[in-house]
Amino acid sequence: MLIHPDRLFPVDASARDVARRLYAGIRNLPIVSPHGHTDPRWYAENEPFPDPAALFVVPDHYIFRMLYSQGVRLEDLGIPTRDGSPVERDPRAIWRRFAAHYHLFRGTPTRAWLDHTFSTLFGFTERLSAANADDYYDRIDAALRTPEFRPRALFERFRIEAIATTESPLDPLMHHETIRRSGWGGRVITAYRPDPVVDPDFEGFRDNLIRFGEITGCDATTWSGYLEAHRKRRAFFRDYGATSTDHGHPTARTADLSRGEAEALFRKVASGDFSAEDAETFRAQMLTEMAAMSVGDGMVMQIHPGSFRNHNRAIFNRFGRDMGADIPTRTDYVQALKPLLDRFGNEPGLTLIVFTLDETSYSRELAPLAGHYPALKLGPAWWFFDAPEGMRRFRELTTETAGFYNTVGFNDDTRAYLSIPARHDVARRVDCAFLANLVTTHRLDEDEAHEVAYDLAYRLAKEAYKL
Image 1 (tube, rainbow, N blue to C red):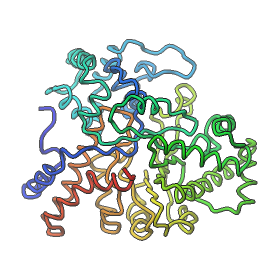
Image 2: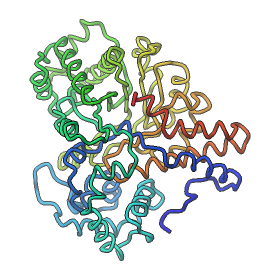
Image 3: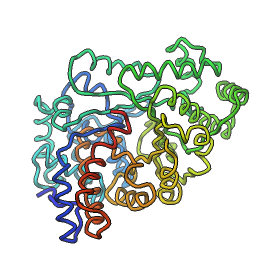
């Protein structure tokens, strides 16, 4: 048996029995995936995935960052370089290398997701290893050539009710247009991620502003034209189903500058002659500007702060962004969010979902803030804490102050398509285990626990993201 039916449930027999009953009531609920990074091209073209390595290894930074940490070169895993220099092209060689290092994932959420996928989708009953790497490869490769494993068929098999991809304002959304015209009934929507034209430190920022203006027909070199370009682009994204924006800033800092101050700051960052403090203040001001726009157009606003992006400069220079070198940092929320919350924290029409990579802020800052401000909700345990223990700590540290209903359920936030059911299954099991302990310690009645389990698995995400 590759995966145990009682995995992640309590050891105590009475609590385990409650967890089983709770889980039985929600395990087959549809998946609402309101924030993620799967490629819309998959759903648009509906072509077979090329091979096991291209599906599991090459695009998944959870996998290749672990192997890199143990001395495996990214080139040997087929990761494309920025300059086009040679990398491993043999998918079977990449897969064998991955299988030979599978022991590195013991105890990690990646291992749980992979084993779940290997078992439920491909029927494997033995752990992946160097000895059975070719058998794994051959069986997966054969399955990928069948109609049942094309992207749209998997979407339906996974019982995905809605999934949001994430695109830059500079993206033409051509794949979403293809999906729309195809007549396929799967609900794939976009989300507005303006970082390339909001973060002055983003590579190519000045060129991005020029392109931003060209796309929208606005003079994005002026403050008023730049804001109008955002409004136009947000409306364009809403036409393709977007209900949310997403902001991946280094910190949660917000600002509320006067119009004159904001115009002067924009001129500096647009010119390219700015300091690190100027860049941070501009990002801070833009969070408040985005909140103002969300009050106007109803889009849910997500802030994903606290990651030192591309920490390994050599890897960034050779391979680019999102290569597993992003590292969590300490993050302040009480002072950082105050300018935005002073303006919009009491707005009933705003939903601001805040995530964190700094677990020390859960009970000290985030839960008290979300437990007070009507506009503020807590995003689930994210990225480095998208794991059984991270999810459990999130519930333990936030529920007593913010309750369950100032959170927004679960989102998988993944590029790894086949891991989506596994990730949602882990979240559902962990929440059922947490609720079971509340029931068996007489802090919650079981009928209430069933309602909360349903809400956490399905309703809260659907409602928070207006899906």
